[in-house]
Length: 77
Image 1: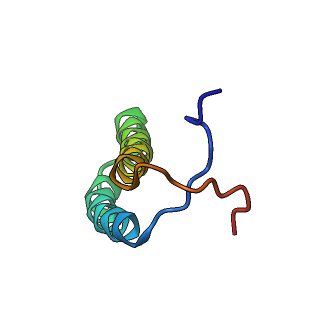
Image 2 (image 1 turned 45 degrees about the horizontal axis):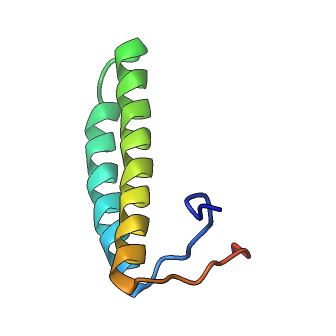
């Protein structure tokens, strides 16, 4: 069975990388929040959230590739 849906806790390197992206996305969202209320603004924010999610997946995949094997972490805290 594929482990593509397993939760994997970030290691130190992945955590640092994710923190960098988080700050960048927060900065962009500040500018998006300055836009006039409307559908386009909402779609822009949704796209930012979606992109941030996919970056998290990419970081997870890189971590698994880098470590060759990553311990499954079923207990999220």
